[in-house]
Every structure is written in structure tokens, then in C-alpha cells.
Image (cartoon, rainbow, N blue to C red; front, side):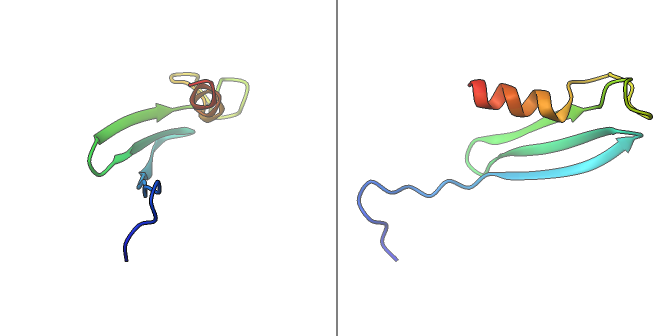
Length: 66
């Protein structure tokens, strides 16, 4: 099917996997722009959080700011 003029499809993927406790790794990107790894952790204010990486909310807010 032909795209209407001025329309572009964008594909973004993300796959999350646990590391330990609240720490997670996400591999995300676009098929034609590479893959990037992100590590997230909750702060020590949550049981199991260690503050070893930005929180998921920090990544979200940073993305909105960009």
C-alpha cells in the first residue's frame, strides 16, 4: 500500500530483561538506526532499589525534555 504524501512510518522496538532486584536492562532502538542499552534501577527509598542507575521515570522525563 502506498503511503499518503507527507506520512512516514516509524518503528521503534524495546526489550526489557531483569538484572537483579529492581535493576533492569532495556535494549531499544530503530531497525535502521542501531540498538542502545539502558539500565534502570529504583532508588534506595524502595525496598530492593539500590540507586545504581537512573529510575525509569528519570528516563521518561529526559525523553520528554528532548
